[in-house]
Figure 1 (cartoon, rainbow, N blue to C red):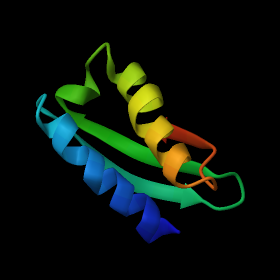
Figure 2 (figure 1 turned 135 degrees about the vertical axis):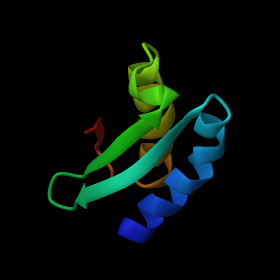
Figure 3 (figure 1 turned 60 degrees about the vertical axis):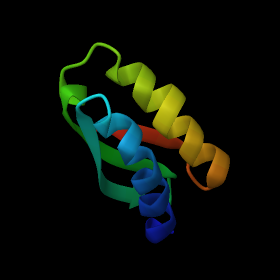
Figure 4 (figure 1 turned 120 degrees about the horizontal axis):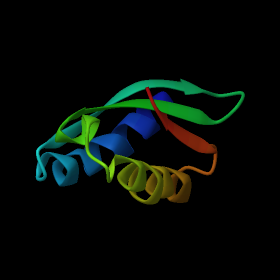
Length: 74
C-alpha cells in the first residue's frame, strides 16, 4: 500500500514543483488510513497549502486508493 501511495504522490509532485513547492511522503497508517506528508519549498509557508493538501493531494489519493481516509501535513 505504501508503494501505491508513493506512486500517486510522485505523480502530483511536478504540479507542486511548478509553483516552487514540493511534497514528501512521511508515513501511512493502515489502521486509520492516514497519510502523512511534508510540504516543502514555497508550499511550506503558502496560505493556499491547506487547499492544495485537501482539494489536491487528499482528493487524488482518496479517489485512487479507497484505503486512504485522511492526508495530514507534518
